[in-house]
Length: 93
Image 1: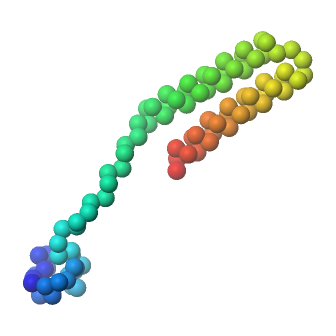
Image 2 (image 1 turned 180 degrees about the vertical axis):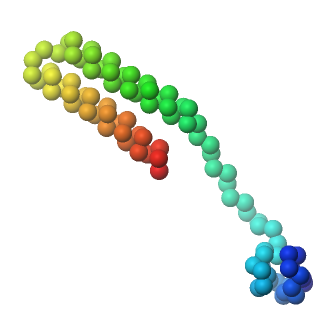
Image 3 (image 1 turned 90 degrees about the horizontal axis):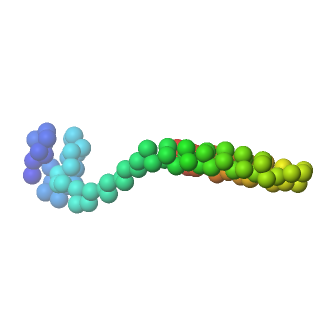
């Protein structure tokens, strides 16, 4: 058999050409196409999450009175910000 690229004489059962490395047959299996994720959907979700953080901060600021309620408000904001940060980190990977 001859290589279809360089014309070198190769064995009939060869998988690749020893001279140029070209495959002798087409691949049996093609890799699965990667799903395309919409970056716009991610931006919209992040904007909504940030808006919810602001609303949470304002509403809890009006309702809360006293030190313990203020601690709860700050804790809720920190947790929400951590969720947004982790989501952004996961998207980059």
